[in-house]
Length: 359
Image 1 (tube, rainbow, N blue to C red):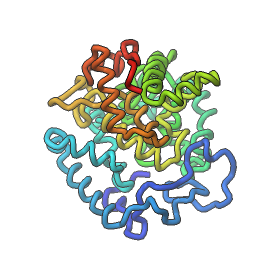
Image 2: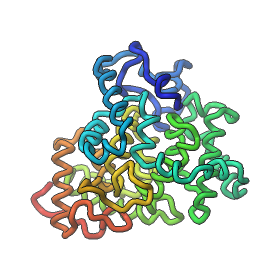
Image 3: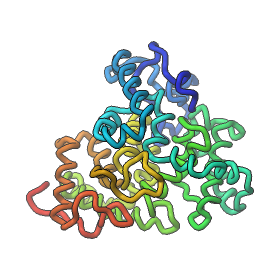
């Protein structure tokens, strides 16, 4: 829940990194033993107690000050110090500053500035009854044990209804996809509805184009890419899944469409999103929302490739993420595709093929 920057900075007693919390739907299948909400707002979460993964208060405060300085001169920072922004995102954006950083990283702030009054107009316009009925049935399923979304009449569910309705009016040819619910819900945990709406627009149209359409063509193509990467980088896992008859379309759609919001512990989701918003865009964040694929020589990673790297990190692969990323870039070069040279979808999934000796 977004607040002013000065109010958002956490007090020293609350200075903890994103280390442990319940949050994903898979972890909250039943009522928790405790009714107290954790620092992320999840009822029954366990992040209140310090753990070995918590960072020292001084280090968190230092990172907060770095982000305040970078965001105060965002255009200059992105044009001259993009590598530093990328490195800081991989370390994790301080929780107190995500409300400020996410719209800057994904370009939502620029879109909102270029379209003043658009969200208010959409929010006041009656929605299509077909989509409103479908959205209404899904509201209670989005993080049911988060304090924002417990009550049907609370500001969480009502804000989620308005954001999703606004998107169906903004893109009537696309309408509503159920996977947009968890994405919008996570955004609303940190942002007011208007900023959450523009971030959702950027995710759906810039980061993951073709994911939320009626046929989800991009998801099917990315499943092929993921299979090739899995066969190359984790051959034993790939072989096991083949032996038990588990194809990628049985598990990838929920992971990719929801950006892991329903699949990983919530602190991990936040860390994935921090890096995803800074690296998985085809253009440099902070630029105009209609900007082309690259700027000033910086190249962001394709969405499918970055989400694969997130899984590699989560499952603690034998190879480091940087080594895996180098091997993926090598795969693109060997397939005749320069890294970062993306067509309409992030990469040419049909050209990426496994090669011997790289597993």
